[in-house]
Image 1 (tube, helix red, strand yellow):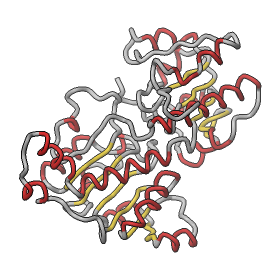
Image 2 (spheres, rainbow, N blue to C red; image 1 turned 120 degrees about the vertical axis):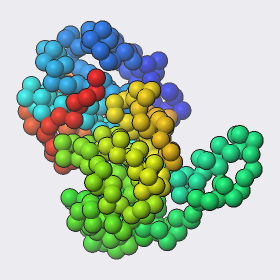
Image 3 (cartoon, rainbow, N blue to C red; image 1 turned 90 degrees about the vertical axis):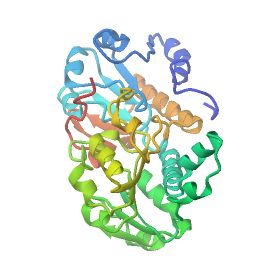
Length: 348
């Protein structure tokens, strides 16, 4: 696969059709995934493998998994398998895999872009130009330098660490919290301040970026109570999963001025309804879920999906870092990052 090809789409088919059909397999590709009349629902009982992207996820609840009597393997074409009820998948012995590492840098770059766009008041200023205006005072009334600010990440795994590395040249004070503490050498290299819990970090940070996976312990982590623990006028960035934040609590905090801005590309459910509160709240920089599906990233996760399929078809072990669940329990990256449980409730 070459960067520049549109692979992560219905028409792109992850570049898999020729490969699969040459081996006698059939491939059904659809964007119709929600509701009992969807193509996905109708095809699911006969499917041995389900491939889904986190950007347009096919939610696999326990009810849907119960209908999938032939299902053996679920592959996430990207990173983040929270659209699957992992507890139910483990009970059925279904293998779950994702393409770890494939888009970590893509997402980290997106986070830095969103931090800068909020703090520098870029989006309202751009809108002013599009409206034909030139009100400098209005544009800069909420624009700041990030130099000297305290910026913290919730989780410092592949994405969170990449965000910290990219922010260091901006001469900000860097903070992080994570169940798995980084090495002393890395903390010293990046001049990081470690916090043993989220609330400790929120009290000191002007900007907070969420980079942890969604699981039963992180669902609605940022509810009204926790958001109120943030500094007044802080910025919140979420490119992890929408369900980590309480949608109404975020909107209220923006309306009240407790948050100076919220940006992200993740929602729940996806795609979100037209009346989702985040579409119409003030001081937001929301986009569709695009941070991890640049054309560069698509080439990487398409290649990873093909590798997983080749391993499955030939009986070779799927590499450990790609595994989320296997043989009835969390495995590989899943055992390190997830909790066995269900975060799909409410998708329909």
